[in-house]
Image (cartoon, rainbow, N blue to C red; front, top):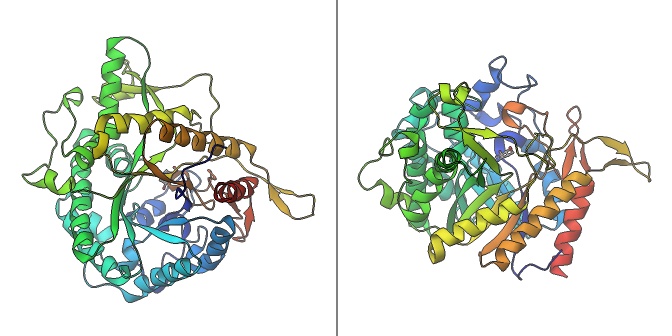
Length: 452
Ligand code: IFM
């Protein structure tokens, strides 16, 4: 592995709903995900996150694993329904106290807490009032952010506002494959703008409270046209707009991309002054990356054409795939990073890779010492390739400051339940037992070697 610049930060990530469990403990309210998981047939294996990795209870075990890995940063998220069970009102002390304990213990262990304020668990009462379709939800998010920053701001020096607003808009409100399970197709677009507005309002709250750093996390894919056919290029441009640019351009450049390929002349929901708020300077830009996407013009008889969409993702042939069937193409991460730099130049804030990783169907076996082991060479190869891809981007002039593996531990993979395992640590779903995978040892050794 090539050497990264000194000061480069290594870490691991999780999210509240995916690991915490204890969904009814200490007065936590329902989120859209509690309701989604209770609806028969929406989660692949019929599971829920009532226990998940039990991290609300076993957080000290997770902390011990992080310390053993030797990470600089731990990215976790704060559950909005623990802080405001009804999505409004004063801070619920028991909820905030939990995160205060976690943050204090991380700091004591020399690990920097990197909390995300919103990783998809919208309080259900807010969904019933319109969810992210309602502009008011952005204001509610700013109120919630103020409570959290007031409670933890003396100890937290870096905040992430939102995680992957694209997935909330596209899968949550357009396709219905994630909570809240709405199938509004193009009518879902106001949720993109309202989430970005929420980011802008929360950024203002964080700035007003002190000198903590702030950033947002977007999921990026490298979009490749399926052929040289101009129709495929147009389709790829439209896909790039709806997946990457609608969420990145307003934050990084204060404008929405050209939406004409999607049949729109302006972003729905946009009001005067919004873009100035959304584009307020941030201290870092979080990139989540998993795979590239090959895009063709929608064929006439496809479900995409039927839904009025001009594009259709098509298979990338001849590359390995993850357990999810996602193509493994590490160079695509370099391309995403270099393109961001080429497009935004010095206006691009330092980048942190806030998530990268892969699911594989891991199995626990008996190790040479009679203990439990998980051999996951494919995950090691995936991580190795993508970390090298980040290094290549740095060599090509991109200012990348950190890399966080998704995920510390196997967890509730949303609508796919527990069928996909992303962890460096294996989770026994019956007992909650944690077993280090080979990738855990590999990442620990990589961090140590980079420091040595
Ligand atoms: O598990 C998710 C995470 O919550 C958001 N980014 C992608 C991961 C893998 O699907």
